[in-house]
Image (tube, rainbow, N blue to C red; front, side, top):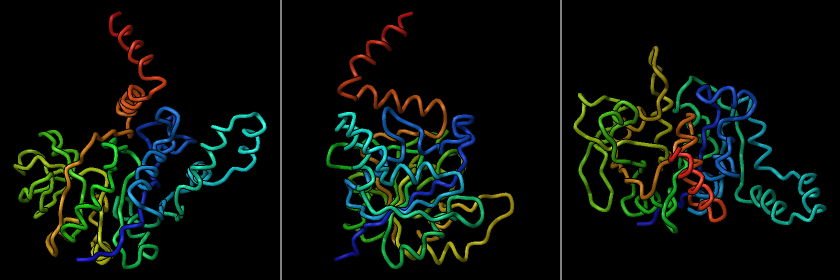
Length: 293
């Protein structure tokens, strides 16, 4: 069976990053660096490696730095060339040419469902991916995060979310998937519940950032009522969608690196620092020395 090619990615980035204040007072949380690149650049590069061509950022009024990063800054490029820093010129020029970048403003109730609905007119009748700007997925070479989801979509023909094996605490943190194991790290999603807690489910398969969705999600979002005192969750809409059609979860091949709080942001820097060819050995020795004190 032939399906429409997945080429569009929606990244909601309108949040104000209160867990990382005061650093995020003037800098979008998604632009905080992990080593020498902002979090979002890792996500964009992985998406492009997966075949994504159009990236839609759903932004807020404090996100100009984000827009500037994915645009050409010819004045800075010229400074780098005059200084003989070809590597810097290439680095800042190439990021603007990775994909087609589209920026729209978020409008509507607070929650993860709103930015997806905001992108409806840009998506049309195509399948698309939603990835949030907090998580960097470090995956095996040749198996980038979104490509893993696309492979399952092309095999089974339905929406796909990213799953991880979690624990009791994870049932309070993630949406939880219930359904049969189809093999090769793929589960059928018969039920998806937002943060049910360990007493309410026997499953320990959590849903994390990265959902490949079909355009029928928009009709659900448009008709889903906002509940008092509760965010407008995309998970709730996906829970309805999995009752209407076959829906799947793919266990992530790789590691999830959260950057949305101070401790996990530090962990992400250490994770990628240890993998860095130039810095890895030096960082490892530094850490050994500090731990021995």
